Length: 288
Image 1 (cartoon, rainbow, N blue to C red):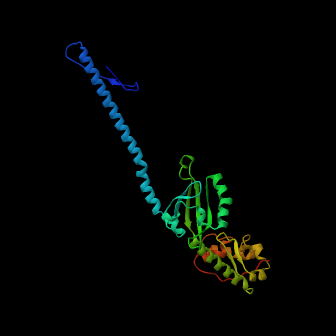
Image 2 (image 1 turned 180 degrees about the vertical axis):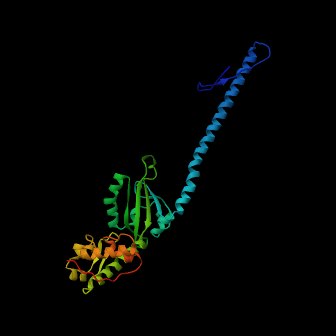
Image 3 (image 1 turned 135 degrees about the horizontal axis):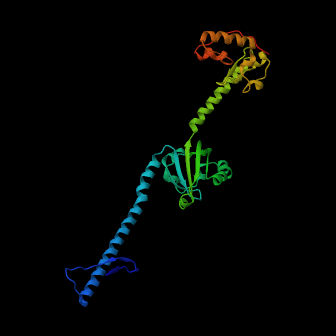
C-alpha cells in the first residue's frame, strides 16, 4: 500500500509478503492501514528531527565563526571599528580605542565625531565622505583628538559594507597611529632645512650635491656666486657634467677606463671613486 504524507507527498510503499497467496480479511486490511500510518508518522518524525538538527547546526555556525573572528580582531595591532549608518560605533577593538585614550566599552554607541575636532569633522563629512560614497572606500590621513584633548595623527581607511550586510553595520573604519612617524619625518625635514641654511650661508665655497640619477639636488649660494648660475636653474634640472669642460671629462674618461679595465664614461667619471668607497680631490676648470 502507498505511504502518503499529510500534504500529499508519496513517501514510499508498504508491502507484506508470504510464502503462499492469501486474501486479506477486513481486520487484516485495517491492521495494515494502521501499520502504514505508524510508518508514515515515524518517517515524518525522523524528517522533522533531521531538519531541527540541521537548523541548530546552521544557527551555531555563525557563532562558531564569530567568536574566533572577534578574538582575532581584538588582538590586531591596527585599530578596527564597525559603525552603523548613523555613524555610531557598533564594535571597536582595543587598538582603536587605545589610539584615542579610551577603553572599547566607552565608545560603543558613540559617534565617530567624538574623536575629532569640529574642523576635522567638517572636513571628513564634506570632503572625504562624498568620495567614500562614490567609490565605496577611502584612504588617507586625519588628525584625531584624544580623550584628554591632545592631537593624534592617524592614517585611516574607510570601506562600506556590501548591501546585503548593511543591516547592523554600515562602515568598516581602520585606523593607525602615525604620531611618532610624523614627528620623525618633521625632525628629518627640520634637520635638512637647518643643514641647507648652513650650506647656503657659505658664499666662499661652492657646494653641489646630486641624487643617484646624477640630477643636482643642492646648489648653494657659493655655487651661484662662483659659477654664475641660479639654484632654480640647476636643482632638479641639470647634472654636474654641464659645469665641466668636455675636454677634461674626456681625458678623465680615458684615465679611469685604463685603470679600471672597463669603459668609464659621462657622469660616471665624477662618481667612480666614490663608488669604490674612496674620495677624490681634483682640480677642474669650470665651464661657463
